[in-house]
Image 1: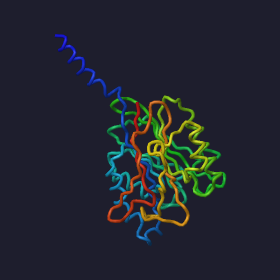
Image 2: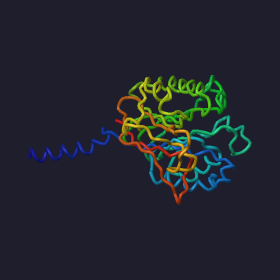
Image 3: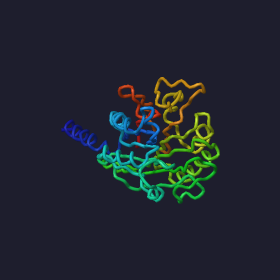
Image 4: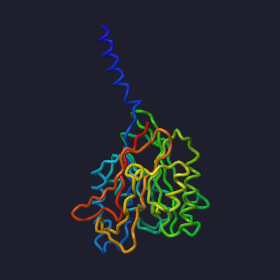
Length: 294
C-alpha cells in the first residue's frame, strides 16, 4: 500500500514538474543585411539570398529571432515565409513616410517569436536619440537613426514571462554608440532583476570596446558567448566571404547576445556559419543561444 502511494506521488510530481522546471528557449540574432540594389552586382542581392537566409534560419528552429537591417521588402518576405511566428517591429511613423519598401537610411530590428509557444504581453519601440519618442531622429553624430525593439513574452505552458530586445548601434561614431547604449541601459533598468531580459544585436563594437568590456557588464549584463566558450569569436561580419574572410585589418566579433536578471542563464552559444551551395545568408554570421529561464 505504501509503495503504491509512493508511486502515485512520484507520478504526480512528474506531471507537475514542467510548470516549475527551467524552460529552454532557442534565441538567434541575425543581421540579415539590408536589401541593397548594388549587392545584386556581386551576386549577393536579397532576391538571391532570401531563400538561403530563410533556410539557414529555419534549419536551426529558434523560438525567438532578433533581426537587424530589415527593410519593407524583407519584412513582407518574413511575414509570408514564417507564418507560425509573430513578426513585430517594422511598422512605425518613420516607415509610413517612406515612398516605397526600399532602403532609405532606416532599417528595423524586427523580433519574431513562435506563436504556439508564447503569448505577447507587451511590446514597443524607442529611438536611441535625444528624444527617444521621435522616430528616425539623428543624435550625437550617428550616421543612421538607431532604435530598440522589445517584446515581453509569456510562455503559454508555464506562464513565465521574460523580455527580449533587439538593437543595432551606429557603425561610425563611438560617441553615438556610447550615448545609444546608455539610453538602452536606462530603459532596461526600470525592470526588476526578477524579470529575465535578453539583449540581441549588432553592436558595431569589438570585444575591447568599453560598451562590451565595461558598460554592459557593470549593469549586470552577461555576454553569453564569452561566458560559455571562454573567448570571443574571431569575427562575425565577413562581407559575404564566410570562413574565407581574411582582411588586412584584424577583424573582430561585433554581434552579441546578453542576458540580465535572476533565474536566466545560457546553456549554449555558437555562431552559425552555414552556407547553401557556397552562398551565405548575409554578410554576418548568425549567433544562436539556448537560454534557460526559471
